[in-house]
Image (spheres, rainbow, N blue to C red):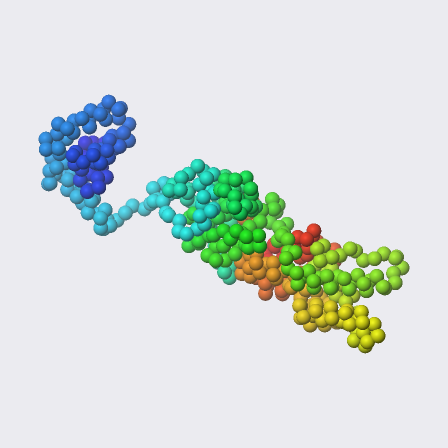
Length: 404
């Protein structure tokens, strides 16, 4: 760097656009520039001491530079200073290395604190920015995949196991309140990966994990292939659904038990907490036999039949009146009734179920209840794994098959 270039750089970094040796701040700027040039401490000190001897506090031994209004250096300095104030000059295209850091808006303070705590950052220190852009279709979007890449993947893996603490616990405590990948996905979309998206956590046992611009996003990390992802969690709080399935499977058991069987075997032990979608159709086939009976007439002599009639009417009130001649339609109604409250909360109709993997491979399925109602494989068939159902009180929907 020539002396003119040094003086020009010093001028440009000065608060007022020109330096003064009487201003401690300007002297400090000069010291920083000299240190960036890898000068020895002795040489830096020598230059700074020489300032005190400069005539008028301006000249640095070379006439025609600082302090002289019409010097070539001063003219260039003034031009750059004016340009910096007005923005009239054409700016060079930014590269990722010199791109100014953007500031995230809104977001979630708890998730940001978790990341800062993990990285050892203070509250006023910026969180690393996402370098690449990732799609977000918003409401009305379709199934899509992303692959976290580059330096983003390094941070993704670093944040993979981070999680908000349980309610009332401090940030950084060992109490884990959520699954893997949730904080990593928050960082990916909140801190630059999709500039128009604001991401917030929705801490709560039956809320979607995150909201992207107010749209629910339920995050799952099963550690398996996307095609095998299907868990939605416990649904025991949905009492009306438990009751409806209890009526259905209870009467199926009753009718099946009363029917003579050469083998003497009873039907499999099906219950609201353990069933597969295709088993709903068989249950309605059995229930249709009860609807053929004049229960009200029998009830005049045997009141228990009035109770049975009332329970059947209760089921119809929940899923809609169903035709005994069309047990598959009744089964589909029951399937939709079963899943609607749960998915209405997590992620919500129009929201997304997201299966994330530690290697950055992620798949998003939009949950469209109307599309699901009309899916030809909603209840599946005997011999299939069952595309919806309940296992050990956990609801499942095979995401890729029914939502993909």
